[in-house]
Image (spheres, rainbow, N blue to C red):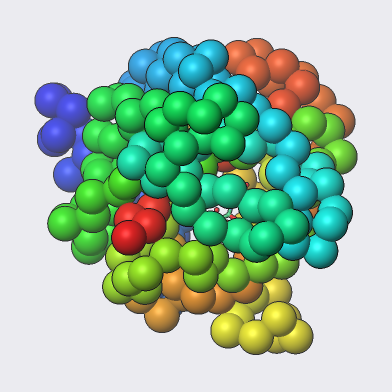
Length: 217
Ligand code: MD6
Ligand code: FE
């Protein structure tokens, strides 16, 4: 089977689960792309180093972050936003490597978003104990565009709620190689990541790495 045929077969397989309307878990979707994806991340981190951002409220985030693409996600005392230059280097963010863009497009297409063209890829690295508190992704301009999220390294538990913070959440286990696509009615739902449990991954060591691809503007 070609890669494209494999992806079409995946589209019909039991490895996909719509855990909320418009929110899909594609288990193991990274598959044979793994080596190219990991190599691409190493290149990006070499050009735009991971760093702990500060929230607008003045807290240091427990994850370390970088970006690639025309727009990179930035947080500091002035707020959350996308910027075309990396404030740490003063240079444009590195381009999204072809292997990463192809993965994101394939995942979006598999669940009904064939026109997804990401221009921002946020890289978050979680050490053991790091977490992401419940939040909405609302710094983008077009909420008709989905977000594609790729999980690598140590496993984690994704929390997924509703349109308001107080709504109950479901827990979705995420493993190395899983991809989540968030679109349509789930696009503005609150979500987060529980503290990453102690462990060592064969490729990424004591870390979880998450990539989120967006059409920022
Ligand atoms: C993470 N992900 O999995 C954090 N946001 O590390 C997110 O915040 C996220 O997975 C929007 C859509 C999908 C996500
Ligand atoms: Fe998010």
